[in-house]
Length: 199
Image 1: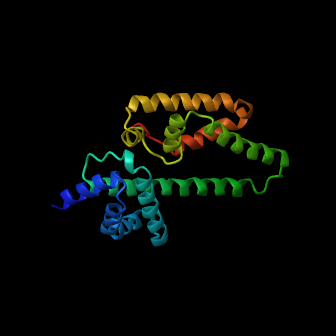
Image 2: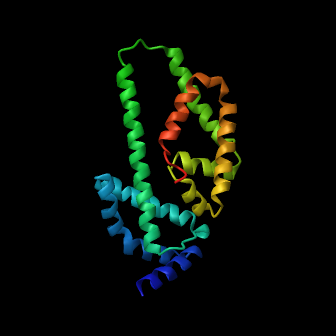
Image 3: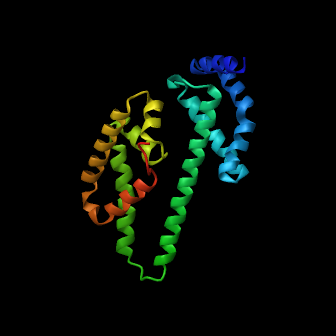
């Protein structure tokens, strides 16, 4: 009966029923915050992560395609959000370590401006991708989703995701060829956010 109720709420949610959304939120929020704390070891961050997940569900409600139980879908989504959060923290720590290691070196202002220009160009290049390709790229590189998860989220095939990612990376390499000295580091970082992506 519980799963039947969840299924009904999910169907109403897809139609934009705010009460159905609120019902699912109230039903699972506390349990999901507790679940998220097991990954993040931070109550406030856990709550923010769960809230963000629910916001995303509401924003993409019309395209939601839940084939498993609603409960399983929600907890899997929170787990993915937590793992993505952990990965971002690792990257920030890695960057902090790099900064500390280079602190003793002489500062080259020219190099600093090159780095600033690089990140501006990266964002501009990503934004110049076709909308669907850009969405796939961001889900993969920024949210750490695997190709299979992206395919399920966007209701497309894994082969399509692979093809679009290949085209996106080729576009970025072409757009950022002036930064070839820095590009290898950039893509190493990108790959670290998505190891075993096709799994």
